[in-house]
Image (cartoon, rainbow, N blue to C red; front, side, top):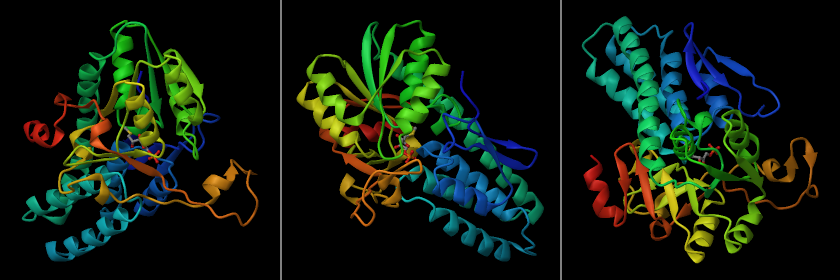
Length: 344
Ligand code: MRU
């Protein structure tokens, strides 16, 4: 059911170019770290866990032609590659988590030959990718317990197979519920400006024969008011120690609406999306992107040339609006600040 969004193929990294979906299923072959950096920056690969995996693979590509003669030289080069990849996108902490894992891996193997260190780096990237598969399945099993027959659920952006190495976070819950033969209906919010909900989530769910209906972002409140939504499931890009959660812009509005209408609001994310060094959502860096993403739809201009544009790619949902957070360890309820400790 899951599609391989990112994988190693003959020493290169093969990625689905998500900017081409749903019209074309096209792959790109990444042979060097720059191509990976650009793929992350331009959202050819996107979604927090997938960004982390891509960054880990980027480190391997960035280091494989190293001519370093000793560990000190190798480590210097590694720091440069890691720093470079870290500039690709700021919000999803999975990127920095994966880069740190790659750094640690080099450090722990510092006594080996350069050739052996390159091999363990490759192995670590494969481990990160494979672990993500198991994590998706575990989150799916826990989350599916929350889905009842006849539920109508709402999601935003794409937190599915295209955002991970397996069947996703929020969408993983739906895939698992479908496997358990539950009957439910998904509403996918289109997710302006880059339309991940319209382009990617509907594409994925339709392929899996899950009942999905596309709505514009500004329709969610009306559907809730008319009792057409039972639960909201979203992914996350960074979760602070108190449970405040950064996710795609528009998530906060859905959480406020859900709270007003007394609809449960669930976040589904692996532990690698937690940033316990950050106390609250106030300190989460929010990416701002190019104005053309707002003034153009595809190639068509929809706003006057020269108009002022503000384009934050993420927002922060305060922990008070979150009913529970589903991780590979199960379902965590508030108070998050206390209960996160048990997730170790
Ligand atoms: O800008 P994007 O498409 O990378 O944003 C992705 C999201 O906001 C997802 O909801 C989040 O990364 C969770 S993906 C499992």
